[in-house]
Length: 281
Image (cartoon, rainbow, N blue to C red; front, side):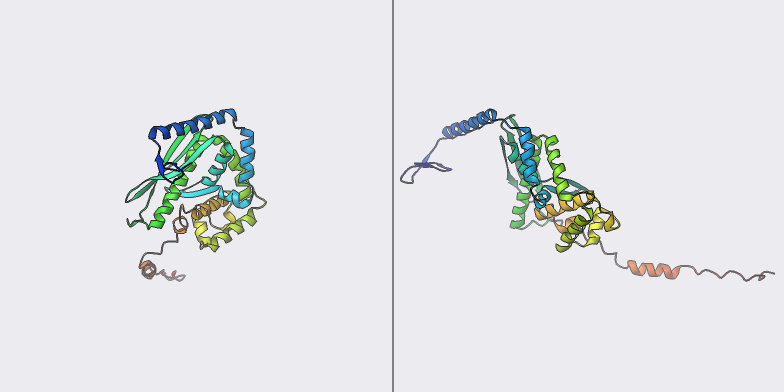
């Protein structure tokens, strides 16, 4: 006799339905066993930091994936990504976490993320809503809706995990992640050239990068700028944003702007030559 999601299956492949009361008792028993194990084998903060740092900084590519950046309300926000949240959750131990889409209408999709610290009995649930229509009000394709839902679930999950795991611990891990991903003053020139070349490969010219960071030249891109560029690249790769949203092309001049400039120059008054000496007398 075996079990499946519907109940107990006997040897003749006949489903024997289990009552709601029995299911509740099973779930309660499982939760109680997990809570008992969490208190019997408590986490070590030192082991958490060691494990999280080892996983998050194992390679430069992994460290980069632990960062994100997104434009919000005309500003750029950067910080630890869902990848770092998953690493921290795994290393923290005694933690239940997950994310899912819970609602969808014509304009928005809503996802829910939850994290439950079994040892401290602290539980957080957070919802995130994302628009599934373009600027013209047209609904996304089914594939884009699914992608947006996955992105919303990831964001909700990240926020829930970072509400349960103390931010003071996360910040220690993130500081090391930035050092590995971004580098320092000694590696700035090489890393800057590498990241700009990577962006150019996916169709982002240098002039768009400079406009986004609001700097005049490549030499003005410092470590903070590299952190933002790496985070934006991760957000594009994860489907949380697009190249055109993050690095928009410069708006073309309004029609007739060049001609207007010519008309102004033509209408400019001519300067009279200075009078010759003695012309007045």
